[in-house]
Image 1: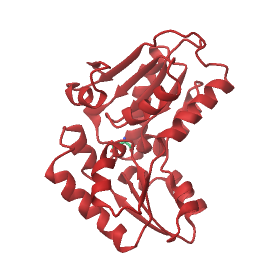
Image 2: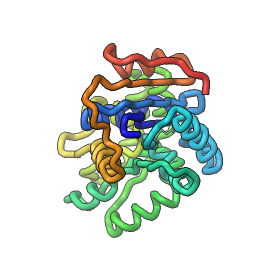
Image 3: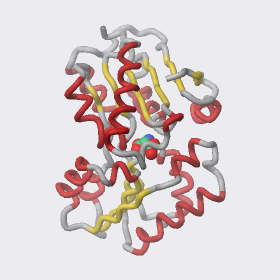
Image 4: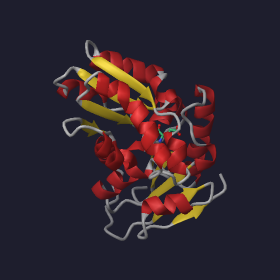
Length: 259
Ligand code: DGL
């Protein structure tokens, strides 16, 4: 069982930012990544639809023998992980916006959160926000349109910069000193964000924490791959995989799969 792959899914290519952290920490693990780009973005969809898509991705990963599933999508985690854990026996790792470290470290008592509508409106997000950010100014911003631009290969476009400028403005007005990236597509925006933000604003995401948690859960279930061999790393997209390929680089191969 320990040689079986780790399954990872996202509404698209954003979760590859999480896959990179997992692969770096667990270089011997076999992995299967699903980019459900055909159905991206998940953010504006309702909870039921997000659960349905998450079930579809989970079933496919389980049919490929995955020993653990990483829901590399804040929107799918905050809306569907409770359902998935109730209906499947395999361990699930989720990702949520890193509100806690930002709220603990802010000196200005003001933090910004950039996430999808689906994440910001979820009960899980409200609970975490209430628990850790109570008494702080929290500027929540729906990053509508950002995922679409990334998925269509327009990350370096003028439209992207303009949209980000609009989204950052209320945060700058509120004098945030931490910006939480609450969507797995957004770590790819860090170079642009750094360019647009004053230097003292720290940008945080949950990628490293998810990788650590994946390792801990595999250890806990005695599922770490103990064989030291070159891992099999599979990446599937249900649309033309050329944009995913550009995010992966030449060392890995993105393939088309109808799912
Ligand atoms: N990567 C997903 C997330 O972390 C993107 C959401 C979307 O498809 O709207 O929320």
